[in-house]
Length: 287
Image (tube, rainbow, N blue to C red; front, side):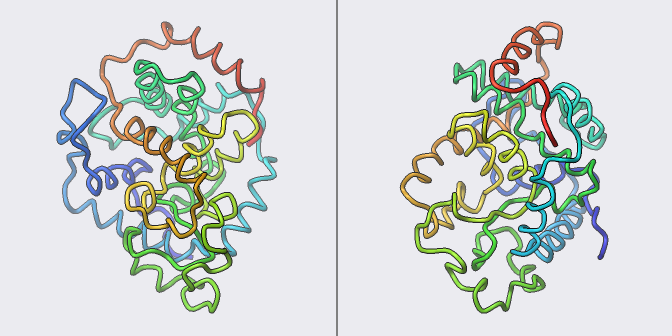
């Protein structure tokens, strides 16, 4: 297999999203939205290579194989706080917006949600939404951890970033997978659809017994930009999906625009988050 690590860091993918989907509104009050993610143009070559790999290898069979492997949750078991320490091994030294570790980024997201008065389960979603990135620490390549997500087993939308790279995917000329509905029925509902493999799908399955459905939609589909920004897969969604995607769209700006240099210290925040985690999650999580 070819080079699996084209990005300097996992956050480079999100930097590209902010360039593709600039938003005039931002939760952060100390820095204008247009001032975020100031990168030189040559960095885009790495993102392009990342998507070439992602689109080449994220096939229907690949997704089923990864789900069969990782959804056994038999790699590691630990308290969530140990998992955050584990995640911090992915600290991004190249990010010009912040020198904070992954835990601090998650806290900024969750604190922005909390400060706006949303339910406590949504605050928890903000805290854990990127936890699935620990897949990289289990040996998964970047293109199988981050990236815009999309359904597999049916035709790809031209609204997906770099759709031309799907021509190298083994499903491209498959008689079934290349059709509009593929293995699915019209408006079958996303609960019946296999999404490309990555941190969204992984953390959704990890948390599906602990959070309300609205929060699970946020976890599972926050990287499904072809739908919640482009509306490209209405033909697979049912009425319930459309209702739930209001929550996905509510969450998305907190993920992208919640960096705040005036974050409270962990010492101040710890009592609240300790109680929050204890309310919803078991003492240890299986990864």
